[in-house]
Image 1 (tube, rainbow, N blue to C red):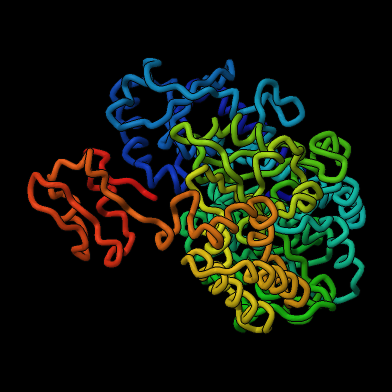
Image 2: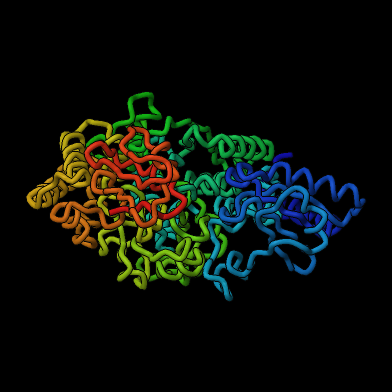
Length: 609
């Protein structure tokens, strides 16, 4: 069936709503994103289908949905009463709990924390869902479910009643900024490409998502793939492009599967392809696999990868909006940026600007990982404080430990200390704190984390992921890593700190692309916020957090040692001496600081020093 005009779309949607009203009144929504499936959601899904079938209850229907964001409690199941809207979410569900949950028994999750009443009025919820509006609420493999949530209505409006310039103007007025990096205004980028006179233009979705701990884009593609397709058609129309490419990392097989299925369904309805909505506008899409190179998150490297060359950044200008893929005007936006577009078109730029801050309107999706009690995916209005995110939605630090820092923006970002927890977070405030928004990865650290070691980890990541094209990044990154390794090994000097700072500023200033320019951020941020830790490693030859093995000594307390010999048996280098039921001693000259004895001791007789 081809949909040729908005009236047909509205009629189809109305017909689907009538059928839905006569269908099951109770929906059992099983979260079947990658994290849910990994946690065991597939047998849970089958168990609920079997139990509903056993009961012979036609008022119940089991649905596979995308990620709800409750990674800490997967597998999750939501029991939704379609008529009343009342629902209950159950976490950590096992297959044998299906019957009990259908009877209202089980571990319930506070739903109001995760699902606001609507985007503008979140009620008691800290979240406001625009990008994730459909994730966990629809079957991502059903285009009918997307229609029922207003799907493709924004595209119909654009193609049949708006000029391309009007679309660009609406996105510009909304203040939407790119959600994948530095926050460049989306409307401004589109306007540059739209102004070019080339007969051929390209639109690219950057779904590479290479930051450690980041999975926002994956969740959207797995949970609401049609939203991405609809947004890309709208963007293609706005800039005059007839072809779109979704550049997705090959490590996202479920996202690729659901995207491909969504594209096939959209083609069947004529929603992508030739003469969409009988408007004379042609736009088609295809998927390009990425090999997991972090540098391909940079738009010029991504474009080179698509064109069959090695993914390496090139000098700008000209910018891709003027000369990108095949030297034609090209727009690159990430998944989250595109996912905002249908909502902006449907509800207007003025509505979007009522959410967030003046300089950063709208919401931001974050993945919270690390030492926080409730890891997962959230979407909050710009301007929400880190305290509300970490201690509100994240419910604080695991095991009662003390908060130390949070890394935002992935390896290109920086660590933010406790003193800044109450700062309203948006693009500009994060930059002022020496960090960045990035794609939205958020790694929480506690008092047991060594900030020098954290800086070394991120520098090593960017060093390994450097394409090697420019000397500042290729050589400067390796030199910074070497100096940090020297400090964590106990061989550092105070002069090394000055050298690291000089190197960091040189790399930031002279690198070719954003990877190199931002690679020193974790080092500079940790040196600014935790200078005492660097001094402790150098002056005292101690690691306050007890992470840097070369700076740790393991000592046996003779008053507590029972002579059980377990520590000696676990030691891989045989540096512990002592007979059965006699006090044991560690030879510090032979000890490799592995901690095996510390972990093995059952009497707390071994201490770190």
